[in-house]
Length: 508
Ligand code: AMP
Image (tube, rainbow, N blue to C red; front, side):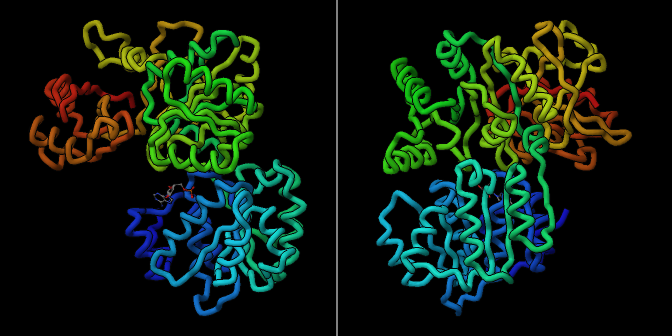
């Protein structure tokens, strides 16, 4: 694993990264930053949540000359929300640099943006339409823009901006460096890359990694008529910190908001029929965690990076597998786990099967958190504890280190032990045993707490504990095998940070 220090960042950028608490580069940063720093064009297949903004932002900031007042870099984004988000992120990375970053987007007065540009901008982050407008009014000149980023290029394609993007690219110097980020690479984007990029290096963070790594996925089969009732039941059972519920249409979105409101739930909607002002209001309230539940259409929620979303609910099944990945990628951010729950009507079962096979993912029938816990495998040989662990198939829905698993349709037999959301632990070295603990970050458990429990509680010497890993809802510890049984005996059912913990030998 490369560290940020090894990437050779300028001290001022490194300082900002340190202050943000980023300890190591994300995969897209690890692979994307070096070629961009070396001046290559890069195509990054990655979406929001992977750390792509820093992947292009850091090399971009490092390239800029603060003493040159021209616009030296532009970032094109498909939506106003993403434009604002990227600008905010870049400003944090540029905290200790003398660099002006200006956001220009539609739906806001053009005058103030013109005056910001007049005052000087090294970087302009823009939506396509507004950038075109500012260029035609001669408020923006791109002749010195030698670093160009197309962010979420496939979204720009979907929104019909590709031709305008090409026009803008033609206005930038031909010797520029271009970075293109896109979650998918449909043919028009490939053609754009061929026509406007020079020998680009491909860097790919596959959707499979994103979905399988940190997001527990489930489906709920429900008739169209019962959907709202079922949604209320799911929300009550899951008790999300924050959830986004996706609807296919603006009308459906408005209707669901009203229905949920009528049932006394605090909910807001985000869709294209709202004024920009209302959309901003909703976003601010959701990002500030004053709103817990958000009903949104795909377009409105594009590229949003919201930290605390614990649940994505596909109230309407997405049209394509790509959309499925886009939607659920809004949870399970930066080391957290999230849950994605997809509603399907009986007629849509085959569409869900298609998503599962396209994305090579496993989606289980939904169970309440209590049922999930009940179905988690019990300790080998325990009385009344369900099937022995070595008879239980593995699952892959939660462990950042597990790979894609063979799909299983758990609706076939509700009593089968495979219906567990417990992640499969990775390989354990000889002489070590991995223990599973049913609490994680969400219960406030830290590495120090577990170390304390193991060393002070179960009286293990320090060297008997080789690894501690805290996930959102679970933890794993690796200890000397000959101490495993006693440790389980001692810790299982004990209290840690006020909550009872269950400790078991994890299947290896
Ligand atoms: P992005 O995909 O650029 O929208 O980033 C998603 C989230 O990950 C943002 O909240 C970033 O602040 C955060 N992030 C980006 N890079 C890192 C990193 N190396 N370590 C931890 N968090 C990061």
